[in-house]
Image (cartoon, rainbow, N blue to C red; front, top):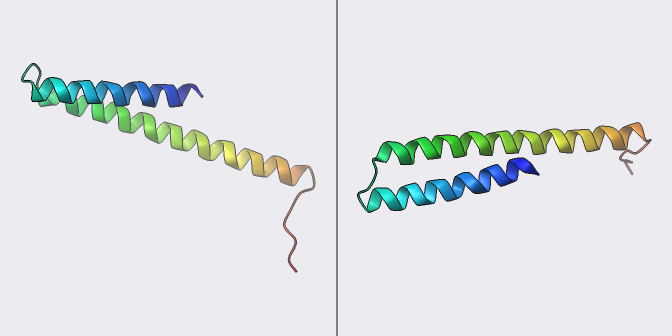
Amino acid sequence: MRQQETVSDLEETVRISTLRYKGGTTTYLEVLDGQRSLYGAQLTLASARGDEYRSLVQLYRALGGGWQQQ
């Protein structure tokens, strides 16, 4: 899934930004900006996964699947 790759890339960006901040070569604003982007991408990924699971349930039900109470 492409969105998972985006999340992974942004995690690496945040890691590098944090190292740069600790090394004194950048401001904390760069770290915060990276975190903001990462959290947005994670939210998008979670939403896409939820949509995928809902679609699978709808397909299963449309094909006659369901749960039996005993």
